[in-house]
Amino acid sequence: MLKASVIGAGLAGCEAAWQLANAGIQVTLFEMKPEKMTPAHHSVGMAELVCSNSLRSDQLENAVGLLKEELRRLDSLIMACADETRVAAGGALAVDREAFSALVTKRITEHENITVVTGEVTEFPKERPVIIATGPLTSDAMADAIAEFFGETEYLSFYDAAAPIVSAESIDMEHAYFASRYGRGTPDYINCPMDEAEYRAFWQALTTAEEAEVHGFEDRNVFEGCMPVEVMARRGEETLLFGPLKPVGLPDPKTGKDPFAVVQLRRDNSAGSLYNLVGFQTHLKFPEQKRVFSMIPALKNAEFVRYGVMHRNTFLNSPKLLCSDYSAQKDRNVFFAGQMTGVEGYIESTASGMTAGRALARKLLGKEAVEYPRETAIGALAAYISDEAIEKFQPMNINFGLLPPLGYRVKGKRNKNAELSKRALEALEHTER
Image (cartoon, rainbow, N blue to C red; front, top):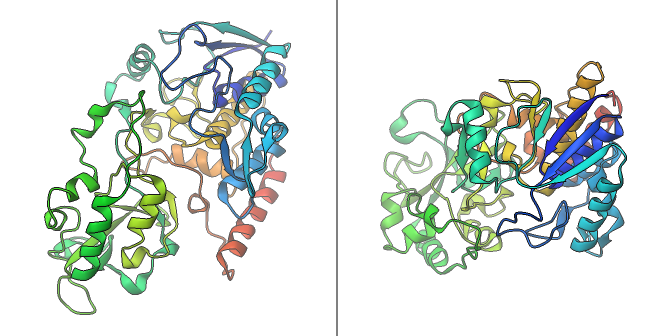
């Protein structure tokens, strides 16, 4: 009898267990609730949606909409339950939170190939194979065990700060230029200049913008060693000019002179399709980030593929530790899934569980491994978390910037995204299931 264990019954763990069980594998699913709850959890059910009942856009012109459609075509438990419990939300997929969790729990507990064991797992499992999906709020004991497994505590990071990321194509290069400070090295940075009036208006908006609430399960101490840009700005109207907006050594080619202030954008992926705002770690609410940062002339129409966040999340330095099937480079019988792998978001977590569960099932059944094409959203996520070229890895939502370019021009962003989705679904159809 073929057996596997899954630790954690969040979205990723449930999806992984479901894929294994449907392949005929006997699964033991470990879940610490209800014996132990984190401050983020309020329900004893599986696949609890903590932050929102929205699973974001359901349109194929949106990358997460594409990812949902791929998961549906791969017989995802999470997507099936979400579709059955959806509530009206325009073009987004939102669910009845309690009904969704109850349905996932029902499907899991009634599956003949799944045995649920409640109680916290505090030691790294000795039995193989196993999928670890303990989530971004992994307990200290398990976090220590995972660190010991990899051999270095630095392999587990505390996601205490991340700057916003914008798509390269949405940057207005009429108001920006490539340069490196003092001309050192190659001009890899996109520089977004502001004159004095623009800077003063930006500073005023930044210092009065509304911050996100600090929830009880977040560690307030994370802010001590990582200054939010809005806090720095409040120290004085000129402070940012000596910090992240320092203009010295970055002359604007249009004038030959240093501008009054400069926001630098640094490439965030090897393809150069994504850029992060250097030094802009922030705790502003997402709509406020969009409003304030769009006041930077070059970013007036910017597409924010990830907003800045500051909170305590445990995640792996996955590109140095995991393979594209989410198995550990150190031991290919140990898999990880969910937000701890560096995928950000409910649907992305589900996709990682899907990938890990299917990969392990094929391995146990003696079938050849299947790698999802980079052209698909599920394959692009897997490639991102295993891209060893990434020097400073940070969690990421799915976005079209992670997919290879089309190779031909399509007029209009929605049309281009639709073409990317069409290509992805065609590639998925030709992938062995």
